[in-house]
Amino acid sequence: MSGIIKVENLSFGYRSQEAILKEISFEVIPGTFLAIAGPNGAGKTTLLNLLCGLLSAQAGSINIDAAPIESYSVKELAQKIAVVRQEFVPVFDFTVAQVVSMARTPYLGTFGFESQADKKFVNEALEMTDTAQFRSRPLAELSGGERQRVFIARALAQNTPILLLDEPTAFLDLKHQVGIYDLLKTMQLEKGKTIVAVTHDINLGAQYADVTLLLGADSSYHYGCATDVFSAEQIERVFGVRGFTGRIDHEKFFIPLGKFAKDSSQIDRKPDSST
Amino acid sequence: MTEMLISGKLAVRVVICLAVLVVVMCLCAVVGTQEISLKKVFAGPGEKPGENIDYEIFVGVRLPRVILAALVGAALACSGVILQAILRNPLADPYILGISSGAGLGVITAVISGVTWSFWGGSPMAVFAFAGAIGTVWLVWCIGRFTGKSQVTSLLLAGVVINAFFSAVIMFLTSIAKSDQLRLTIYWLMGNITEKSLSVLGVSAGCIIAGIFALFCISHRLNVLTLGEDEAKGLGVDTTRTRMTAFGFAAFITAIAVSLSGLVGFVGLIIPHGVRLIFGPDHRQLLPVSGIIGGIFLVIADTLARTIFGQEQLPVGVITAIAGGPFFLVLLAKYSRKVSWLK
Image (tube, rainbow over all chains, first blue to last red; front, side, top):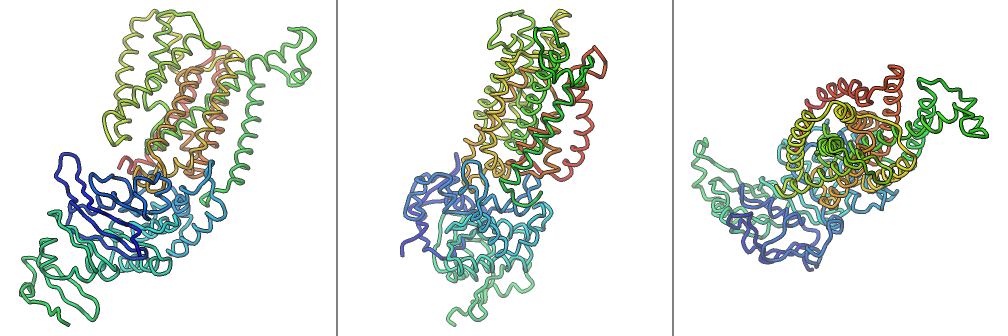
C-alpha cells in the first residue's frame, strides 16, 4: 500500500539558522499510528507544521494522498488533515459545541451555516470523545484534560483521514494521558485514521504507536517500528540521558536515571533484550 | 444561546430586532423640541408646500436624522465587532487603528483651508474626513504588513503610533485655528449628528448596508480567526485574505460613518460587548444583531442629545461617552481578570 503521507529528503531551517531538519524521508501507511519523539529543539513541532502546510519545505517534498502538499488550497488541506495543537484558551467565550462546530468550516457554503449532515458529524464527535455532557459550557471553564478531549473532538468532526497532534498529553495527569491515547487508538482502529502524534513520553508513545520517528538534536533521525526505540544506546544518543530499559511481557519501557538516582547501578546493568 | 446556531433561528432574532429598531425610530422621530401630532403627519403633505408643517418636520427633518443615527450606529457597532475579532482583542474599537485621528486630521484641514467644493452632495468636511480615514487605515495596514510576521501585534502598534502622531498634528492645527473654526471642529471631534440631504443619506445607506452584508458573509470565518492564526489555517481559513477583507470593509463603513457624524465614541466598543454577553460570541449572530442594536442605541442617544437642553443641541458623542464610560470600566474589570489576548 502506498503512503498517505510521503516525505522525501525534507530539509528545513529557520531564518539565519542552521537547518534543524536535514534530508528526512519516511512514508506513513494509511491507518497507522506514528509517534514523533526527540529532545527539545530537535524540530518535532517544526515537522508537524511542515506536514500541515503551515511552513513550507526548503528542500525535498511532502506528498499528502499522492499529491504534493503545495497543490492543496488551505481549504482542501483542512479536509485531509486535522491538527490538535498544544492547548490554549480562546479570547472569546465560545462553548464546547461552538468550538467543535468550527471543524466544519472547510465544508460550509457561502453564508457559513451548518447543515444537518454537519451537525451529525459534530454530535458524533462529541459522543465519541465523551464531551457531549459539557457541550454548552464555555471552553475556558473546562479542565486541561477535558479541553484536550474537546480539541480531539473538533479534529474528529473535521472528518479528515489524517490527525496531527502536538503533545496531546502535555500537562495531563497519568489517567488523562492514558485516556487520550486510548481515544486516539480507538480512532485509529475504528475509523481507520492515520495518526501522527508528537510526544515527549516515549513509553506511552511506544505502547500505542505502530511506528516511531526519533529526531535527534544533531539533525539525525531514526524511523522504524515503535518498539525499536528502546535500545539504551539509541536513547542515550538521541536524548542524551542514561537510564534503564526493560520489558514487562510485551511492553518495553525506559526510565531515565539521573546523577542523583537512588539506584544508579541500574544504568550499567544491561537489560536482557534476547527474551 | 449556547447551542449551535440555526439559520432559521437567527433570521427570527434578526427580524425581531429589526422590528424593535423600526418602532424606536418612529417613536424617536415624533419626539422633539417642536411638538408634532402623529395624526397630522398621517394626513399627508397637503395640497401645497407649507400647508402641513408637522408632516414636513417629520418627513423632512426628523426621519432623515433618525435614519442617519441608525446607520451610523449600525456601522460603528459592526466595525467594532470586526476589529475585536481580527485583532483578537475584546477592547478594540472601530477607531483603534487610526481612523479617528486620520479623519480628524482631514476635517481640520478642510476647516482651516476653507475649501468649499463638495462631492456627491457631501460637505468638504465629510469628504476630507472620509479621505483621511481611508488613507490612514491604508497607511496603518501597510506599516503593519511591513514590520512583522505577527500581524496582529504590529497592526495594533502601527495604529497606536499613527494615532498618537496625528493627534499631535491635530492639536497643533487646533491651537493655530480661529475660534469660529474651532467650534465646528470640536463639535465634529466629539461626534455630532446633523441633518443631511437625502442623496447623501441614500448613498451612505447603500454603502453601509452592502458593507455589513459582505462582512456577514465572512463572519463564520471570523469565528475561526479568533482562535488564532495557526488554528484558523488548520481549519481551512485563508487567514490573510479573510483578515484583509474584514479589515477593508470595516474601515470602509467606519469611514462613511465618521464622514457623516464625526467621532461618535463608545458605540463600537460597548454594543458588541453587550450583545456578546447576551447572545454569545458566534459572529454570524453577533454581527447582524450588534448592527441593529447599535442603530437603536444611537437613535436613542441622538434623540436625547437634541431634546435634553431644548433648542441647544448637544453633540451625540457626549451622550454616548457618558453612557459608555462607566460601562467600559465595568467590562475592563471583568475581562482583565480572565482574558489572555495576543498570545
